[in-house]
Image (tube, rainbow, N blue to C red; front, side, top):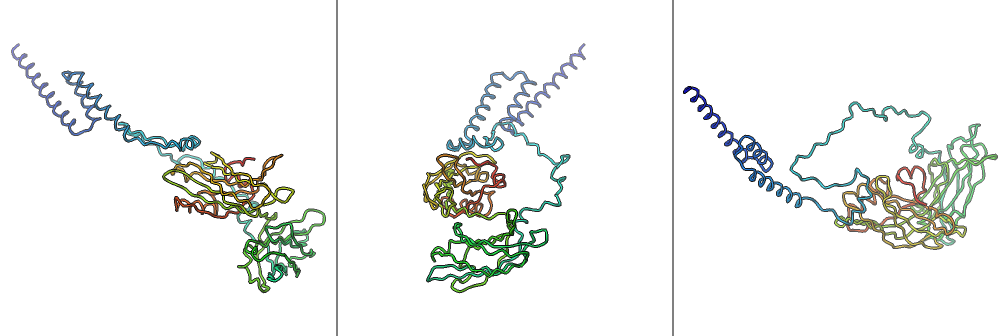
Length: 424
């Protein structure tokens, strides 16, 4: 029995020494780690050493939770109340939520991979008959030769159609019956037409036409030539067109100058709908975008009287949805209205790359539906001048940037680009 008591006492001594080592090692870990590891170590010690009071454990836990709550309250960003309505209209995947600053480590999002996925675009076959519409719009249909001369005393512009060369065949016999229509835009009421030349692809017209126009208006006028193929029993087919925008740069109008131009492919005559001038200004600190509608000029006449009742509607688009729309006052019986009206949208700076503006010039009608005269679009994803105007506004904040924009027709392709159906 004495040797058993000695063995028990020696085992107790070993256990106490191991418990002491455990306490020392756990104390070292508490010094090195932060608030999270400190709480975990205290829980581990409570399991191995029941001599730590429960009150101490609860006080430690309350202290750590209080520190976490204070940190979250002081670091969580606050959002502007003016932009709440804008964010409410955003699609769900674009909402900006507050980051969680809790003590738990954020879960790493699983990166999607393309392995094993079918890509439908790899299996699309291009039709042999279908052509790229951009290439089709850019191809030429022969050339046309004409002269220009301006008489400063009588204020008369003389246009002489000389010849056309290498026109496409429109008839089954491999030939065409071409003639030319002449306009001096934006006026379409006064038009001239050459004689029809039978069965030829290289006609010689040699006909002169005269347009009375003041000298100060020459800079804003455009010469429009439309080449047609005459058909006795059906509608005449359009071969192509030529639009000469700057008459002073094209020739010396004081003397007769010969000009050769490529005939651009077209199926219908281009209609000059007019232009609109507006300015854009963005304040990044306030998150405010201001579009000032200044004026329009040479709008298309929509009424029987030869005038229109125009107003401007501005729609804020985001990810294929119309978020807001605002409009100006109506100007009665005019094709050159002046507005000078400001339209304001509240847009956060982080969403400026996701929005665009659709500007629609409308004709007010008291009885029926209001008609669209023409539209234009500005934004990061717009084309040409619309994209350049938007980028210039972002490059020069707090400064109004004004430009003239040509109006275009509302076509199916334009609606698909805008991602929204225009309201009536």
